[in-house]
View 1: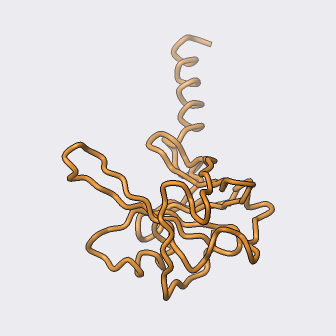
View 2: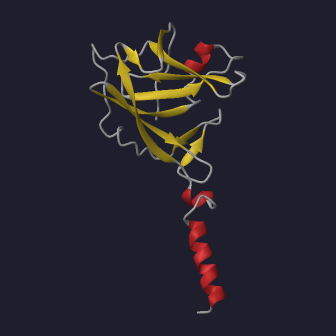
View 3: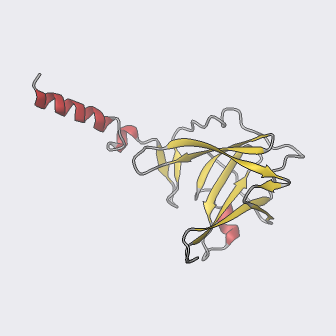
Length: 167
């Protein structure tokens, strides 16, 4: 086999194993709101989801908000929220200022999705994320629980939360 055929073979194998050929490797679909969801759910925390019980620190009639300023001028401030469900799932998103907040909290087709688990004084979060050069990956991280809320998040009771997660 000549070196040209070898190079073509190697490049073909690399192309087939990357997201360059989405019909062979694509592990996600995109909702009508531009958010990514796994085609086949492979959440590790989803195999045995945490079911909230009475007395758990997380409440399903609340959202947890956190604000971040992205530059020193203060012009780019973002408010993130987490919404938890009794069946071990959660939704995360950035609030838009021009859309009613309740509408955004109830839109389960927009934002990041994942599963959570409570462990002593922390929440373990597993989220599905699609990056620029991948076909979708599962990332796990944790957040500390402080008193009756989550570190760096403000708990806000919201009337009118609806929807059932389908991920």
